[in-house]
Amino acid sequence: MPPKFDSSQVVDVYICVIGDKVGVASSLAPKISLLGLSPKKIGEDMAKETTKDWNGTIKLTIQQT
Image (cartoon, rainbow, N blue to C red; front, side, top):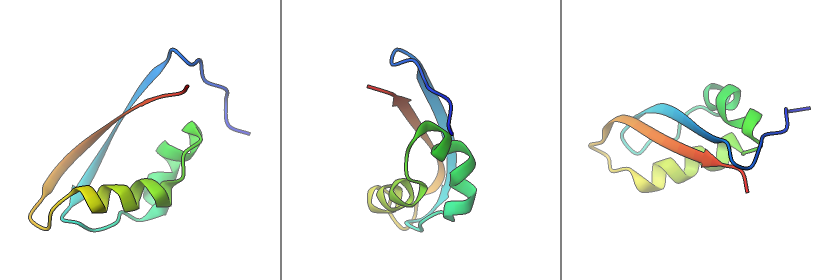
């Protein structure tokens, strides 16, 4: 069972993204699933928001509500 997070806690997760490709869910899972989020959904959202020529790091700021 994932740990319970304080709602005032803010977690920053940095993820390297190449183009508009969806990251492998298994590589996102260790960081994202512990926060109660779906790695597949996060990967799909990142692919929608990046362009084909994007190569860089995305910073996700997550706060539980």
